[in-house]
Length: 394
Ligand SMILES: [Zn+2]
Image (cartoon, rainbow, N blue to C red):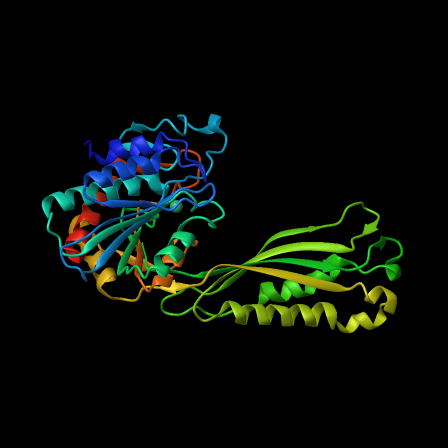
């Protein structure tokens, strides 16, 4: 079995596994894991492939360490803009180029190789090692990790530690480890006014005008100042659609917005505050008294919410300590904990009461044209992952 991390990364990256496509990546991983004594369970839902793999340790109630990740990648963008084709990985001057190099086929290859080395060196390890791999992390995240976790919770599977291989690093491999993420709450808002001729404003209610004061207050609000573990909560309007011709007062505005929130907020609390702001500026606005009653009947708004993930945090403890020590021992420099950045599948696994960290390659090029990772980075990652296993399941 070829267990060179670069060869394995190249093999994975040569497969065009754009979400939810897996293109044989998971079968390749399962092949390696089976040879290393793992039992494999497939959890395929609709068009999404997922698998769970476990190698039982000697100690029945010993700790369970999970490697979590995804085999899907985002689309390449215009292939002609790539210096080399995105699904034909190449190494030039010690850098491996191709879609998925950093997010996250490189780190998956590193997990497999670290595991292989560890189980061959310590076949009688005490704790257990598990894998949860999905092909739906970059997509709608409906049939991926979230559903596998549900199935695992139903049968009371226990997970003590989880490493998600998302690219957490900023300049050097391991310089940043994510030990939590802010929550993400999205909303779609429709504001209904009354359409009319632009020259006859008294016969219309402008849905854009009605939205502005409320949105302005949302933008200006300092939601909180964050805390020791989290940066401040933030609000962003992500889309605003309204209007048609130059001579029409728009009767409808459609707005999307998103909150990234710290543990100083809850999703329910944010929803209540937002509704109060819209009620105040749209429904109960003092200027509404000037609008004729028949038009006013049309004035309304609706919000539909989507909670993408609640905030989660892994405080100092065995996993965080072991991770920081491993990085320092292998790389010779200290690492830093962070909860900044986007969401990851860690938010679903956190529901199992598992300690979670994210540790993967440098994230400078992820989702970009010419995504890349340094060969030495992946080699170091193998060593860090292996050291972590030695500290936690030996
Ligand atoms: Zn990713």
